[in-house]
Length: 108
Image (cartoon, rainbow, N blue to C red; front, side):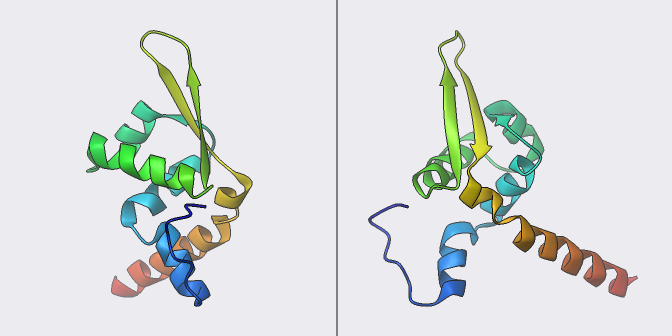
């Protein structure tokens, strides 16, 4: 994990520090189905800019949530894969899906 970040006492705050940004949750959502290239993430996370995606991927790699593999090709091929720690967030996202579905159904 990134050493310059202060580790909060509260576990909820710790979780939010790692995935509290909407873009990070959507990146994790897309990587839960498997390894993705940068261009695939750009297409699937609609509305994100290349600069923001790059920044979040770097931060998530530094935090141990994903790995980045660069292939020595021209143009460079880069793939991102969730680590075991990143994949352990699946139950949280599953709960978010269930809650969001229930909320949407309640609105109808």
